[in-house]
Figure (cartoon, rainbow, N blue to C red):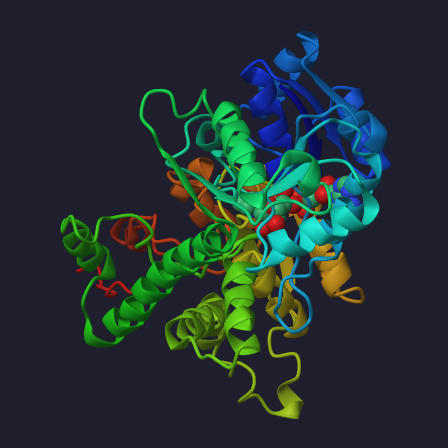
Length: 474
Ligand code: NAD
């Protein structure tokens, strides 16, 4: 099949390279000319394991190319995938401007006898109809719009795309004015269904993991799934807070819970809150959808509230350690209570194996530290550059107080405390003897519960984590 992929971010690049790998002829488009220029030179603008190899193989096989020209990507395509961003608007709703602009541009370039426009971006319920109307206003060619939410996870996106747990396809209601040329709306939808089956034939071959539903249900499946997973994270974080107060160990509690097959072990890891480009924005967008029709979703609201609170956890622990009050309890005379302190932060990406720092807990911590007057020595295996850009944008006057290190031990040198925000593999078993010698102050705050508290205490370090009792070394 001939495919046009609109947007070359985490979803578009992986989908484009993945579909090319199945033998399709794929043209990826972006309005970011610098990004397309880099891709044409063989540079991959995001960190995603396995992606550079997948792209290189398929470019070499001439099944994958890059362009900024909509005609080139869309005119002859059987299928066009919309993979542009849907960032949060100021009120929490999903900002659909990229999707609608891309849809209009696609409409202007349609030339085929029949094109299926597949929306992979995460969009509010009813968006397929809006996309259909925008395309119909720009084109008189036959087309259908399909909702096909993407469930890949950054860090394992290639694997998730090539071997998905499920493929959800939302079809209908028909296409725009071209419907007449193809018969009834039902006939258009049936033709779109056939295209969807062909598109995903390679991934549903061994077991049929494709669920075909109506477009509105497909759109909601994506939001409901992310909100549910986010809710599990917030739930265990709530239990961790309780454990902290009553002397139970949340690591044992989560293991005991996860042994129940009705509960399962996934997404029950306590920490410093969830971040990234999906959970935070999708829970807020779901709340906004409900609000727009006057409905409350108290579980989702609590999920979001608990997460915001959890992102303050390490800063609160640091303030307690240094004997200062966290905001808003702080008095004006204490405006910069951590002035003179240097804090090392390990892990800046919102999770391991990605360079994505959108809504990363580490950035919330660093911004709080800067506001409180501290200096920060930060280190991430791949996200230093993106974090530096994000912090500069968020705290333009203060960002000079953050230094970035490729070597995590250099970041720890001379610091008054070390905070771990992302559980990268390289941080799982660091040389803690070396860390103990490098730190000026002997305090370690483990925001992901990956270190051995007893070992650190034996080295003379103060150790705190999330929801585990603090035992003294006899
Ligand atoms: P991204 O921000 O990484 O990439 C979006 C790309 O679209 C950018 O390169 C941008 O330049 C391009 N773009 C914007 N407007 C355009 C236009 N009019 N024409 C062509 N290109 C345009 O986004 P992402 O993380 O890949 O996410 C894309 C969508 O998929 C979002 O709706 C997101 O919620 C959803 N999603 C993301 C993930 C994830 O893990 N990142 C997973 C599942 C679903």
